[in-house]
Length: 265
Image 1 (cartoon, one colour):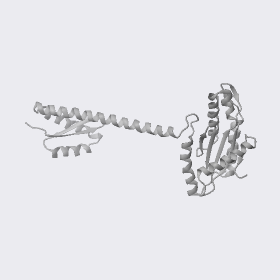
Image 2 (image 1 turned 180 degrees about the vertical axis):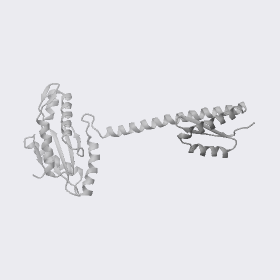
Image 3 (image 1 turned 30 degrees about the vertical axis):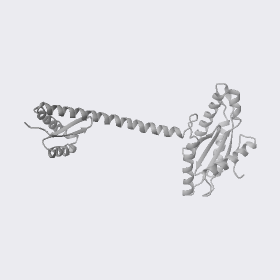
Image 4 (image 1 turned 135 degrees about the vertical axis):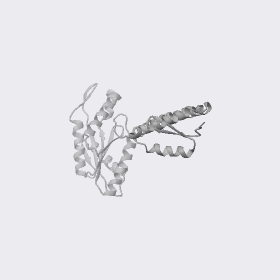
């Protein structure tokens, strides 16, 4: 009787095929042939599988049991590999989501301070490398503490969300808006000169204040103060640029709030 001493498994789509022969040379030859089979040659694949099955049925019971055991192990292995592939895909998705959440602010859905600095440093390096203008805006909600003290933090959160939304809608896709901390927001304007940055800041101020914010306690009038600064060459980093914008913001508040102040004026 013929004993098929050598066999190998081949997975094609959802099917597991066992190649068996007397010698390893024949098995390897079958393997190479099977790897070349395309969708048009599926009948040949089935014919070979059927022939091998007929031969196996003629083998001693012990060999058949060993074959069935090997087939079972191979099937389990294929199933485990597929499950592992699915879990790896899900793990990659979760890792990407964790990374995204680590740089985003839960309330406003803007970049948080960490995310803003991570993106901002790259933008500063780009401005240096290509000698492009870069402007920054620091803005603060006027008298924000009063909203929390008078109406509670839920209303304060509503004000923060609405200000973030109104500012986002008035910026370009290339602009970078983040929640710097508390009621303070920061903006980077790539390839924007100081005069254009001032126009952008005035637009943010106007669209924040021109229409009251609707809340559970009624309509609330909200204004913001803004400071604008321009990136000044290789000697300036992101932190220094934002510091200049923050100093301008402080002067805008000193001058009565609800206005734009440009650094150096």
